[in-house]
Length: 434
Image 1 (tube, one colour):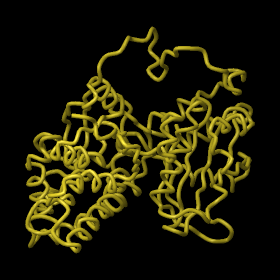
Image 2 (cartoon, rainbow, N blue to C red):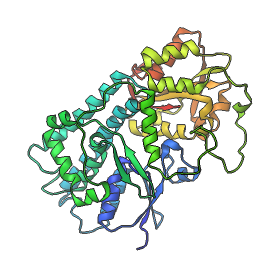
Image 3 (tube, rainbow, N blue to C red):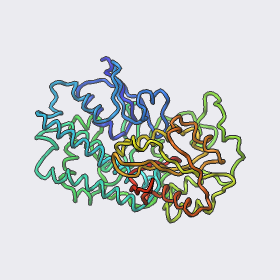
Image 4 (cartoon, rainbow, N blue to C red):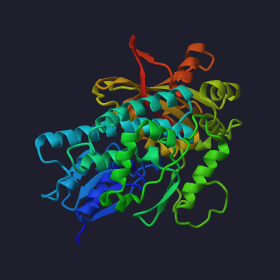
């Protein structure tokens, strides 16, 4: 069977589950290309998808799509007799409505709930609680709808059910191992919707299990598994993060063992040009020590005091980041993706810098602001590795200035609004570069 096209994503990506499910059901051959933005994306991929996000579809005919809902609808529509897109225009619109709710109002909050508890974002108990509350508020809309409905649209399974189930699977699954489509497998450690939660959301839980057991879904996801007790809302312990990382890495095929214990360093096939900051003397403050403290401890209570106690102004400098084209920003999630793409292209400077940038405000009325600590005092050397750094303004901060200190604290704690040009904007979403 000739390939219909390529799907760029990674195993376990929630937004790709429905795409793979309908492709398999429609007997559409999609070539999987592993692309994991968190680990950096290539210049070639950015030509395909300038935001550097996944999934992205590239058809055998050259047709490109880069948003999961659009891709899922396009793949489903290749079967002209499909019932997954509804019987009427109202059905179709309702399907898009539920898919959009999951994509924009549920999955981002599940992610915001998960990442701080696993050390991937700064832990702040209040932020985790707010993401948990927002997740449940959106799911309660579906819970009420399912009181008198078996499926989301009509009386039979639709693309809405498959897509929404895929987006919320992170909340249900315990540690499971999924076979990889790229010769790899992946372990999931995701525990939110426990026995107590399922009892409080009986209709949603029943619906999820029903959808998961449909052959079109279980053929790509396996049978559903559930947990009895949810992961606790507390900062992850260092050994807990290490065990999680080890579990995920153990699922991957073993490559040649490195000759040292530095897991983050990979053998390079050829020498690369030296980074401008490489010539600086070895610092007494090891940046990785700060990154671990930030990841594993309460941000306000422990991490930030540690930073200011150990900060070395003779070795590092602090910088404010401002996006220069805020008037062009639209949807919050798209702006967060823009920040993520910028961070991806900062990869060459990873061992020299740490920082966070956030979206403040709401859709069509937002700003991007951040704070960084870098080796040395030359921002150009740190940020010029990213071509889009020209879109940002970098202003040096004074570590002795209380106002600048508070600005850095707020940018790294994600719990206060920001004021830009006299207008206050509430925190909406953020990314950490560490």
